[in-house]
Length: 126
Image 1: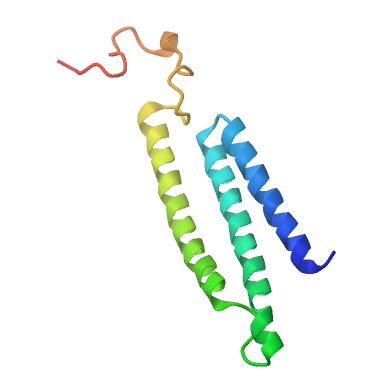
Image 2: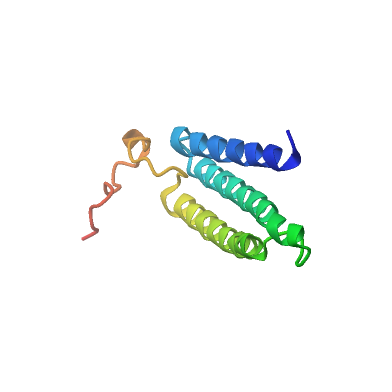
Protein backbone atom coordinates (compact mmCIF):
# COMPACT_ATOMS: atom_id res chain seq x y z
CA UNK A 1 0.00 0.00 0.00
CA UNK A 2 1.60 3.23 -1.10
CA UNK A 3 0.99 6.74 0.18
CA UNK A 4 -1.50 7.68 -2.51
CA UNK A 5 -3.74 4.74 -1.68
CA UNK A 6 -3.51 5.53 2.02
CA UNK A 7 -4.54 9.14 1.44
CA UNK A 8 -7.40 7.98 -0.80
CA UNK A 9 -8.67 5.64 1.91
CA UNK A 10 -8.37 8.45 4.45
CA UNK A 11 -10.41 10.72 2.19
CA UNK A 12 -13.10 8.06 1.85
CA UNK A 13 -13.17 7.60 5.63
CA UNK A 14 -13.57 11.35 6.18
CA UNK A 15 -16.45 11.55 3.70
CA UNK A 16 -18.10 8.52 5.29
CA UNK A 17 -17.82 9.91 8.82
CA UNK A 18 -19.14 13.25 7.61
CA UNK A 19 -22.14 11.63 5.95
CA UNK A 20 -22.86 9.66 9.12
CA UNK A 21 -22.72 12.82 11.22
CA UNK A 22 -24.82 14.79 8.76
CA UNK A 23 -27.56 12.17 8.73
CA UNK A 24 -27.56 10.96 12.34
CA UNK A 25 -26.69 14.00 14.47
CA UNK A 26 -29.65 16.20 15.46
CA UNK A 27 -27.83 19.42 16.39
CA UNK A 28 -27.24 22.13 13.81
CA UNK A 29 -23.66 22.79 14.97
CA UNK A 30 -22.83 19.10 14.64
CA UNK A 31 -24.31 19.10 11.14
CA UNK A 32 -22.08 22.07 10.23
CA UNK A 33 -19.05 20.22 11.57
CA UNK A 34 -20.05 17.06 9.69
CA UNK A 35 -20.43 19.07 6.48
CA UNK A 36 -16.92 20.46 6.98
CA UNK A 37 -15.66 16.91 7.51
CA UNK A 38 -17.13 15.91 4.14
CA UNK A 39 -15.45 18.92 2.57
CA UNK A 40 -12.11 17.98 4.11
CA UNK A 41 -12.42 14.48 2.69
CA UNK A 42 -13.17 15.84 -0.76
CA UNK A 43 -10.21 18.22 -0.57
CA UNK A 44 -7.96 15.32 0.40
CA UNK A 45 -9.35 13.31 -2.51
CA UNK A 46 -8.54 16.18 -4.88
CA UNK A 47 -5.03 16.22 -3.46
CA UNK A 48 -4.69 12.52 -4.27
CA UNK A 49 -6.02 13.13 -7.78
CA UNK A 50 -3.54 15.97 -8.25
CA UNK A 51 -0.68 13.74 -7.18
CA UNK A 52 -1.70 10.91 -9.49
CA UNK A 53 -2.40 13.23 -12.43
CA UNK A 54 1.10 14.63 -12.40
CA UNK A 55 2.68 11.26 -13.03
CA UNK A 56 2.37 11.53 -16.83
CA UNK A 57 4.12 14.89 -16.93
CA UNK A 58 6.87 13.69 -14.63
CA UNK A 59 7.33 10.51 -16.68
CA UNK A 60 7.73 12.55 -19.88
CA UNK A 61 10.47 14.56 -18.24
CA UNK A 62 8.70 17.90 -18.57
CA UNK A 63 6.60 19.56 -15.98
CA UNK A 64 6.28 19.29 -12.27
CA UNK A 65 5.20 16.40 -10.15
CA UNK A 66 1.53 17.25 -9.75
CA UNK A 67 -1.51 18.45 -11.69
CA UNK A 68 -2.13 22.13 -10.87
CA UNK A 69 -5.88 22.14 -11.67
CA UNK A 70 -7.02 20.03 -8.68
CA UNK A 71 -4.65 21.99 -6.46
CA UNK A 72 -6.29 25.24 -7.60
CA UNK A 73 -9.72 23.72 -6.97
CA UNK A 74 -8.69 22.78 -3.43
CA UNK A 75 -7.44 26.29 -2.67
CA UNK A 76 -10.65 27.82 -4.03
CA UNK A 77 -12.73 25.26 -2.17
CA UNK A 78 -11.00 26.03 1.11
CA UNK A 79 -11.92 29.70 0.81
CA UNK A 80 -15.52 28.92 -0.13
CA UNK A 81 -15.85 26.36 2.68
CA UNK A 82 -14.50 28.84 5.22
CA UNK A 83 -16.96 31.51 4.08
CA UNK A 84 -19.86 29.05 4.07
CA UNK A 85 -18.99 27.84 7.57
CA UNK A 86 -18.79 31.40 8.85
CA UNK A 87 -22.22 32.21 7.41
CA UNK A 88 -23.74 29.01 8.82
CA UNK A 89 -22.33 29.64 12.30
CA UNK A 90 -23.53 33.26 12.18
CA UNK A 91 -27.02 32.10 11.24
CA UNK A 92 -26.93 29.53 14.04
CA UNK A 93 -25.90 32.16 16.58
CA UNK A 94 -28.70 34.44 15.34
CA UNK A 95 -31.19 31.56 15.68
CA UNK A 96 -30.02 30.93 19.22
CA UNK A 97 -30.40 34.62 20.10
CA UNK A 98 -33.88 35.04 18.66
CA UNK A 99 -35.49 31.68 19.35
CA UNK A 100 -33.50 30.64 22.41
CA UNK A 101 -32.62 27.28 20.90
CA UNK A 102 -29.93 25.99 18.57
CA UNK A 103 -31.87 23.24 16.80
CA UNK A 104 -34.06 23.49 13.74
CA UNK A 105 -36.50 20.91 15.06
CA UNK A 106 -39.80 22.55 16.00
CA UNK A 107 -40.92 19.51 18.00
CA UNK A 108 -38.03 20.01 20.42
CA UNK A 109 -39.50 23.29 21.56
CA UNK A 110 -41.41 22.75 24.77
CA UNK A 111 -44.72 24.62 24.73
CA UNK A 112 -44.94 24.56 28.51
CA UNK A 113 -41.76 26.61 28.81
CA UNK A 114 -43.38 29.57 27.03
CA UNK A 115 -45.09 32.23 29.13
CA UNK A 116 -48.89 32.18 29.18
CA UNK A 117 -49.19 35.44 27.24
CA UNK A 118 -46.66 34.47 24.56
CA UNK A 119 -47.85 34.12 20.99
CA UNK A 120 -47.44 30.71 19.40
CA UNK A 121 -44.86 30.48 16.60
CA UNK A 122 -46.21 31.69 13.26
CA UNK A 123 -48.90 33.89 14.80
CA UNK A 124 -48.65 37.64 14.27
CA UNK A 125 -48.92 40.24 16.93
CA UNK A 126 -52.05 42.48 16.78
